[in-house]
Image (cartoon, rainbow, N blue to C red; front, top):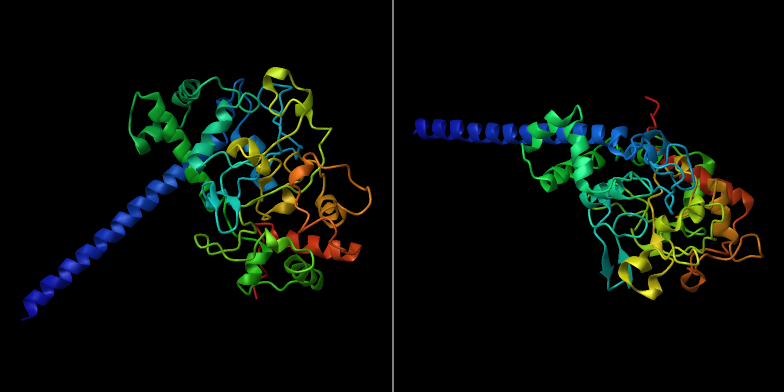
Length: 368
């Protein structure tokens, strides 16, 4: 009676070992894709003219926002500027595809400020072809550059050899998406995460700021404190859209680029989500960004209007009080319920900022 049991043990052991081996191979392949994606992300030869990489506008030391903290980023062609502030790609792996939530009556998800891209892979392919960003005329142009890159052999080892340009472009964007899903881009390593894990104690100012964030300042209405189901961590966004009443940024260099490259309406208004979904009631609305690494990603707002965290917090507090700020770029759809007259004191503004600074990654808890 022992032999069948012995056979069963050997069979089960082999099955488990096979599963472990399979998982190990999958992890190894994913790690190779991530490493390849990082090389592509940092490659300055993939723009036209050369000199601009994805990492130029999404730099790790700036919370994956613009390397030079510009209100909008200059493209590969000197003098051409995007119309919008470079949004951080941190934690973008958890942004769902754009959809309409009938229960809440609002759009949710989609990548970029206006939600136009449905996936990380789709998003990764756009900057290469944007004339005010990396400036390549078409996907074949990008693929040709990749074919002469030092990492091309690794790309072929991972994905297989093909002469189909569309397939090669898909491999490129897949590797970029893998990198954007990596721990380096989504580390969850802030003071806040350490606090959640019992490895950090908030200061008095940070504690007061967190309470303000949840209640009086109403930040948590959109930058929610519920844990994301996939991430298992707080993302500090509900991925919805809002018109904050941000003024037109007259310093935006995009306003002065040639007409052939101009991306706003004829009267220089950015319609945001409305231009994507074709609904007037969504004009002027932009996706609620994560607040993770917010202290690193100045300037703020879709058009980079606010130079400091202090400025935008103060704007949230007093937008509708007096005439301290100019009129909104698009007044018709402004959110007047959750910001504009919060009655925060200057000390409370400072405490709120102290809490938001706990969301910066790469915090090293003191070992007890």
